[in-house]
Length: 323
Image (cartoon, rainbow, N blue to C red; front, side):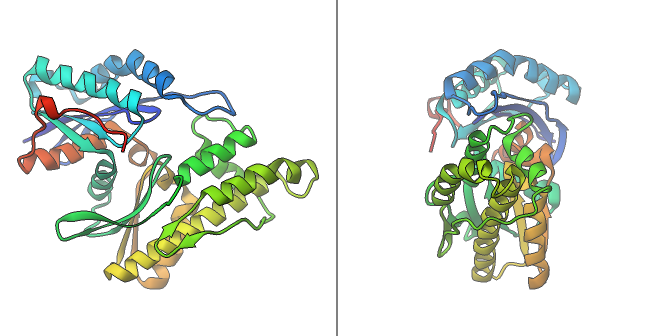
């Protein structure tokens, strides 16, 4: 039996997870939360991660009832992500791998999300919509590679939602996206917003610029409520994502959709994607916030797959990349 400990810290979440042959033994994490109207800076985020990472490692080992001797491999997020937080996590993973005398594995963050989704949902060969604060991609497995069939040409969908939340001062606790989702449930008036799909790709910067400029005018004039704007933004962004996912399904001849990434736990996105899948006679797979949002277990699971296939990251190659 192969036991892998995984370290994730590419953005404002720091997580350590332990996986043994497809079973998640532990998966604690912490979130760096900033005041309303603010994002999270790389240096401040890294400082947060440094302050809690050893506590989270101890929690993971205790929860799994394992000692370092039981670990077979140490996996960490090599990228993509924010530079300073990635360096913090890589440094700890590198150090522990040497202290414990274990092989090291650098994992692609995006593949971590996909492999975790496949493990939890048991999806066979899905078209994957990967949506988070830093990434928006439609991915499918073809000829022994995960291939990107469509993606954002500017900002990620989660970044669009987060930046809109800053404009109207929505709380970052537990996350801006979650709070927008709750407010959107109370929205009744649909405000028409720019809708930009270019073939298999999407663009979110135009709709963000429009709503950033128009939000305060609309709210102060009583044209709509903050809840209406949350509702309208969600409906527009998610419609674009459903459209490009359906196009990728048609191209690949796929009958399964898997939604992964932090935005993937949005129930309205799952509902809209479910309607499209039902119309096509396809199946939708999604997970909840335990595994959608960045976590250590997803890095451990991708590391487990890689380790079993003979991969190891040598120390000189254990760098990080933001891209």
